Length: 482
Image (cartoon, rainbow, N blue to C red; front, side, top):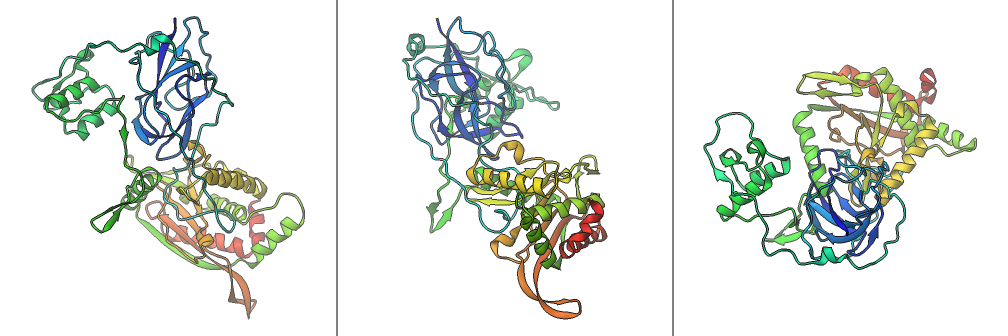
């Protein structure tokens, strides 16, 4: 006799509470293996293929493509044979759940739940321009798919077990209605999860006036839903995901409304928070990059892997941060402390068709130009194809922004919160320049530094920027730190 196990949408990390179904990778009746990806979802940070911790036959799916599910909502159900071996943990995990053996008892899904079919579309992203596809930063946490597939599993279509197809009982026990009670004047309200608290807040339910039906008065989801029913308010259950309006512009009243959701919404929140919290300032300088371009050409002519200009600029940044560590830090507002960091995890802004992303090169301070070039190339390609993992988009300590690819000379970008600074690089173009006392045509670039004025004053920021400019003009300056 088969046992039907329910797989819920796991916690995908970074405080995310919901995800949008982009594409189902299995259908009802398919046989799935442990750790096989079953659905592709999109969060505000990444596109992720979610692996299922159970092996068996898919008996039901919850949510159409385009629907948005909260974390903890049922995703699908799998019929597992009574004598099937317990799945071993394989390490293919996301935050909040793993592939360990399932619990002995799980809530059974209503048999006969309608399945949803459909095809998803994954749009590709294209990079552009000089050195690496880059753009104006502000969100270090947005991109495409994360968790890699555990392997290619060709689903075999079989009939769903009879037990899973039987009609649901006409009636089922429900939680006792929540009774209004005197509102406590102080102290926390015991609620089973943040999702239940959010459901109450979105529908105007005062949790302090509910008597929870759970242990020790714990307020359950059913309590909030019952309160909404009593008040004739609409109720949304976990099995009824909200289908959000598509991101396509909607004409209204002669104007166009574009929903701030997904990556664009995350970017908007990040930029707004940075502007609210960080008192930023910007300084800039023009530099003669002729010698840097010659040095790069000489490196590449010597054979071996080609060195990118972005990698040389990154190497200059890490050397500068070793001299001015104040800029490799963040402000702990609650403790009122500046936290200086030992490692440099260098973010670089990349513009894709899906939006702005800031991949992070881990331990950039410990890499040479060749290693930086390879890592920039790998992350740029992953951003272009939408395969960046969530961990590759977070944890940056300093950002390098090559906005010169857009053909502009300068910019005053918004700092990638909670970092303390960002170096901007404009286009490198031939300009008249006084060189060795004479007017000459040189390759000139404008460099800018936007910094958090709480972590340092203009002297430190100017010192860092001047050091970077000196290295650009005379690459031999770097020899002092190699």
